[in-house]
Image 1 (cartoon, one colour):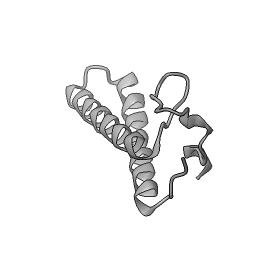
Image 2 (cartoon, one colour):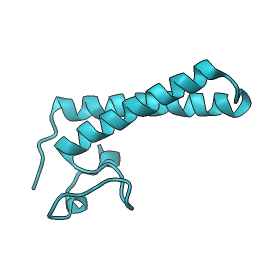
Image 3 (cartoon, one colour):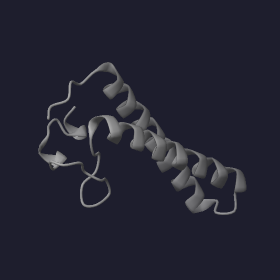
Length: 87
């Protein structure tokens, strides 16, 4: 099964990268400000957003992560290219 890489593919990957950036920055901030309730709420909000983006992406294009982090349909989807880090 081969997927056509359309504009939506790249937009969703871009959105995921942006959310991941925010989560890394919030994680670093919370390491030094663990009691900041607003930052914790914002972290949780972006973590939920990330989950939705990943679910939508994987439903349309296949798994993003291996080793049990993402489910696969049959046949095994990891043989399909390109992988997210190749684009």
